[in-house]
Image (cartoon, rainbow, N blue to C red):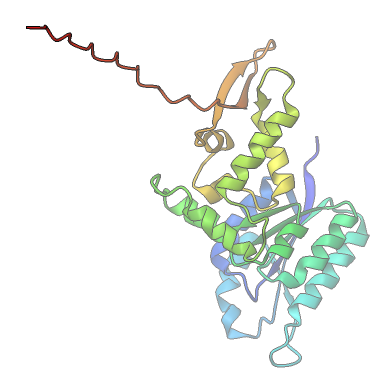
Length: 273
């Protein structure tokens, strides 16, 4: 199967160059970068820090002057280019790199055209933009996870940070909502054995939560993440063709042990004098 051809479009006004490696690595997990463009007013000294990152990673800077103070003309230029690339018909998907929710409508339009849309931004990104993408990657959480091993005693720290991205959204992702959804999936997809492939569970989680990523919860793999829930059990099985496949099922809650009833003390018969 051929790799998907992607366009990586970066909003330099609100994305730091420290994320460039994370951006390219995440995009590479989906396909090949047929176009890599970054948008900003390059006469602005604040964007000078991007210079080395652009040269070392062959990212093309697209110049857009700010016509009016306080107005961001970069967004418009990025949206126009995205539509031009869409109508060229040579791409399978887009990586929109920005924490700006103004790209929500663009993401929705690209998906309407049948293109894969991967959003990337910091955990401050608002919920509407996150939900408009097929998948959304929190760059700051991924970078923190790659640089520092998460503390096992606080597995929900990253999840809480991710949930802040959709502040005020009732569907914000957290461990409780994920566990509840997985239990429901197992009930729906169970073929009678009580087990469901973890890969199917992962696919459904991403469809329900575009920003779902086990690294947001301090885990390195989906199987370890699912196994961290007391109610879930993960097991590897060898199929008839010799391939190892991971399955997950809901683990029955252990019944509390009942203390054995102590026999009532025997009454002593008093002797009559």
